[in-house]
Length: 212
Image (cartoon, rainbow, N blue to C red; front, side):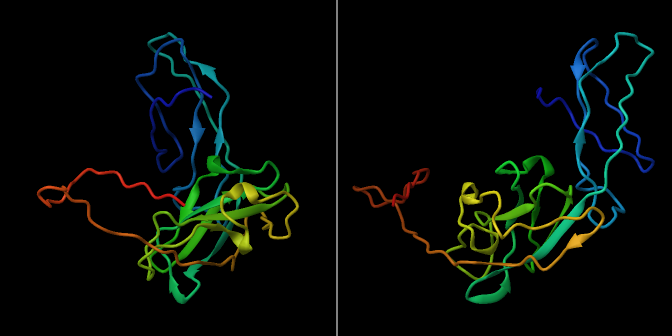
């Protein structure tokens, strides 16, 4: 799997280059198309090259080209259960039901200020996808925040999502599956103040740990 070395962005004609790599070192290049310009509906599926050895010559450059396949996309809106207002800042993870693991290699989408999201770059086929909605950084009408959950009432954590569930979402390359909406349950909150027992002054830097 290797260690991260550096990053760059392809030019308008698709070319890219890395410099400053150790000669005779072995490197792979991973291609993240989540921010590609003028992407088709569904976006592209990310990929990584095989490991290649960078030559020792001062005049040669190792060439690593990559062709990215078309992907499919899924979109929808996230709201609160007691409000029709959109919930912003929710991270939407695609969950590959064929291997019971969040497809982090495919990235994630974040809901907009109106609660809408679009997750692109998902390859079609397999057992389909589930979606899990991480509300830990969400902002909305609820002062207590929101509870994270997966699509269509599947509980968080996502490990409860099992292959063969009727809640799976089919993906087709080059097209978008829309209307995958979810309502997040409003959560409760606790707040207070920590003070010095003698002076009554507020104490900064105290870690609060909630227990249930």
